Image 1 (cartoon, helix red, strand yellow):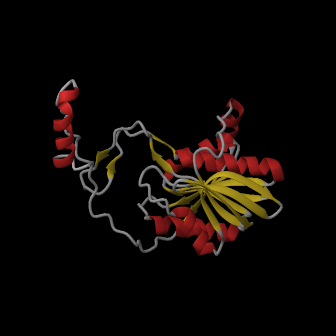
Image 2: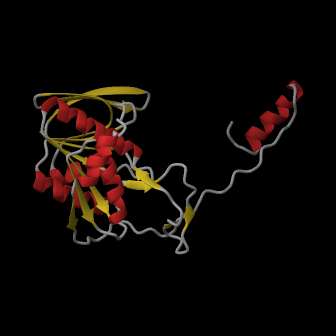
Image 3: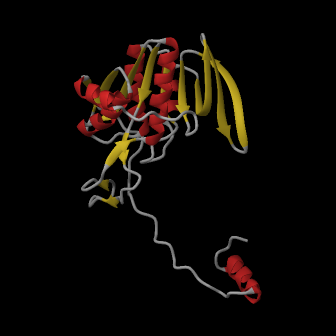
Length: 248
């Protein structure tokens, strides 16, 4: 089975992000980066599928040289090959999906996995866009997956519960936390990843569909207010929630 896993290189969740001087990007000075957490579940599911059906898992990322770090992590987990679709310039979701879809069309995979979203911009668009560009079915926010032959049965999160759907290979799957438990790279896997070659491909620039006008951090939270310590404070608390906070 031929399996693709799409991954992104994102700021660490514990990093304090600052807006750069241009007001449109983040200041990367001192920022630690990591493999997008949701993409770890995508890589793990691809590896599990390879273990069941044999074949190979190719991990792909779009970006500059720093993205090799995310690819190395996926290779250390056990992926067979890494591919960097190289473009150091920022791309919107459509442009990223276009590059990934072009590579996938050439590779002709049986299954494509990616995280349900990337934690940097949270657009949650890549899986659906790639599927549309390839003319493949797609299932999003998958928390349980079974593939038998060419039949795909997936359980996905919906508002208020889960939904079970069925489709067929080839398919694009975007995964959610809970689908599996990503493995930790072993020492052997880390050493092997250093020897594995990452294929680099230059990709042509495309017209962006979205222009970033400004990037800003959310306003600081206002300090808390204590209106009392016993039952006599309830009327005032209700008034404040209604008139100031406007939540009731």
